[in-house]
Length: 324
Image (cartoon, rainbow, N blue to C red; front, top):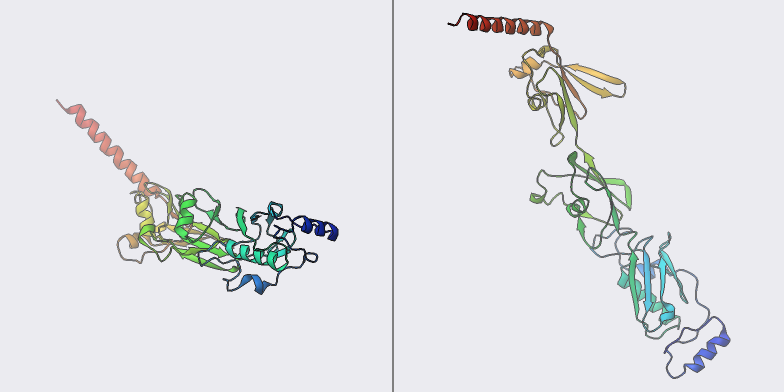
């Protein structure tokens, strides 16, 4: 049965003598403590932090479990540090960031062989915690949080894992890659996700996905259903907003309608010729998110309609009174 040699040269010789006929361990000088050169471990890899090839790659914060077959003394757990290295017994520091588990196993086996510690070692490396293989999903989803991304994943997969879009979700999604935080990608979702693939972009470990809130326009004043209305595809006009509010009441003062809009200098008021727009004599006006369409009521019209209602009601009562 092979045994791991100790730091002491005397004890090392004793172990070698005791295991002369069966040992696979060859005593050598003290283990190195420097990291392996980057070009020895990385090989032909993707850019730092990327996993566009669909392979699971090790990253900072991952907790690894390393086992050497038939050498239980070398079984250990190690977490990848901020410099991308792990420290292992005998062989010291090994750079494993951006490697696949299989590539890391090969590197460790080579270090054990080259150092003369184990002949023909077989290393099994598993990831106990996927700290780096996650994405953050924020904004208008049912369950914002961090979700594992193992292998190839796309935007729809991650949104589905987060419980899908919320009722206030808009069509805009911002994706920020860990390796390029200053170059966010903006994706516009289609109305029916499963009928489109061009917006179902690949997602990499470390990405941050923010589903933007849909814009809301508010219609208040003398309308049938004053309320806030979600902008479909971030577009909504005055006529569309008025239609969603059920239209203007008969007492509305259409020529006094205005758009209230928040600006850095305060709230601005923009008059609109709503009566002309309704009669197709004026151009419809586009609204922005958080705009307020205010349609005031006419006191004169209200008085006239109240008087008319009173006359009609009185006439109805007179007819009832004289009916035989």
